[in-house]
Length: 320
Ligand code: SF4
Ligand code: SF4
Ligand code: FES
Image (cartoon, rainbow, N blue to C red; front, side, top):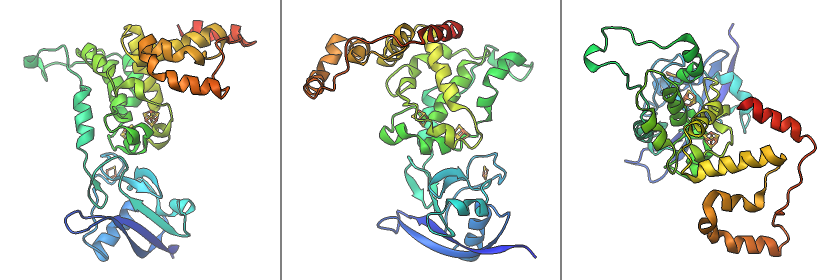
């Protein structure tokens, strides 16, 4: 006989047309080992409460539409096992189901995906080929195997928005490009068939673009396809260095950081604001600098070179 267990589902509910504010509904169902979160909530919808609302389609981890937060973490409901989630429950055998973070809620677990579409449009997240429109579909438009290897992992993205939901910068600034749009940008910039990379790189270099990522790695941990998103973010930034797109604070900050490490192995914090923002730009930080100095917390202007600096410089040489 199949092993079964009584499991509680604490599910986020909100229908703006009738509810003053969101609330949680509890459902208890008997679930056997091997059942996914999606199948469990389908059972609740089919047998207990037909008003429960969420998206799904392929049921095989391909379409990306069933992303939601399970026990506080953004995941695909169709590839997440109910029994595996029991060890992540705050209350014994009670699994929490909520909509993705960083989106407006339309109803229950259904979120308004429009910000993702807008960002994909803004950062030109498609290939515009050299081939003439009239010739499209008539002959192959290929890239080499070596070229494809560079973008291979990035092409696995299913646009589920789990990374978007977990991104700390997205929570702070809704204008931020987002990890998924950065990943797509990398994939397009490195595609030799594309003709709009100059335009794309110029938009990426603007405010809220590629330089605003805080390197928190939450997108990497959340990615349902294990895509190394940070490598892609670094990839578009490297592209900016190759193209000498040096007009932004982000570029100047990253450059100053790299120069310091190459010279001494340490960051010269006392002057990084001036080197990033310029003297006039950094003037606004003067009161803060004075407070830091009075409290004896201002970093020194003089930085000692670390003992292993030869090794660090070798790394820089190799990267070049
Ligand atoms: S590493 Fe950057 S893109 Fe990824 S979650 Fe953190 S801030 Fe967002
Ligand atoms: S990068 Fe990963 S988590 Fe983000 S949308 Fe693509 S597949 Fe989903
Ligand atoms: S239903 Fe398509 S990824 Fe889950």
